[in-house]
Length: 271
Image: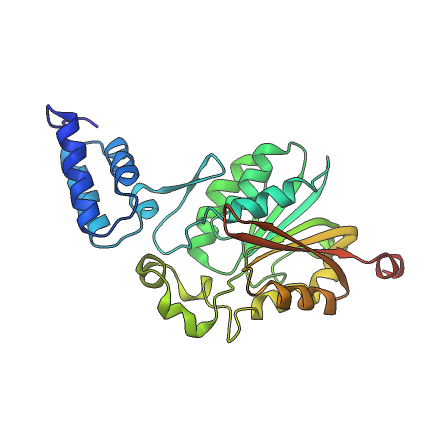
């Protein structure tokens, strides 16, 4: 930061104290990021005031750190969560050279950007219904060779993708409507409700994704859906009703759960 006070440690201590007083749990880490990203004392002050007022840190600095990469974000988007790195890990373990990957409810494109950066030669498509998210996703994915569509789930996708998708990832909204009011203010006040609200039991969007997935998956395709540990038995039922065989992957470290659905051999043979 240019134009900073002569005693850097005093600046850090002051910022940490203000953030901690505002209730920031990771005040030290956030202070370090704000100081590093501010270009002047005046900008730092503005950023601190925004954070104290509750604006998410990632929106203030313009990016989220996800799987070791800077993912660009803008106001009015769902900020990628660390738990979704587990979805990336599960997908990455299944990706083969030349695979066709589709990320639905892609948000700002964090999952797709990481897969493109770590797996050369894959064909990646992403889609989201929310315009601000799509703008960010295009900034994160298209420079790496992926394609982003705006629209409702499968609706904007080209018909030529049907039956070709090897890996379908989805971090669809899975918060029950009645529980949104219990979420942290950073999510509840600054992220669009459409990116959080999964309906009465939180799984309405998962049902829509799973129901049509067999029409888009290749014969050996996989559908990977992030869900909660509590909701995972219902997510399993949803995928199995759609004709997929399922496994459940769990990371206690990230408090993350992914249900993986595979095309059944009898259904794949008949498609």
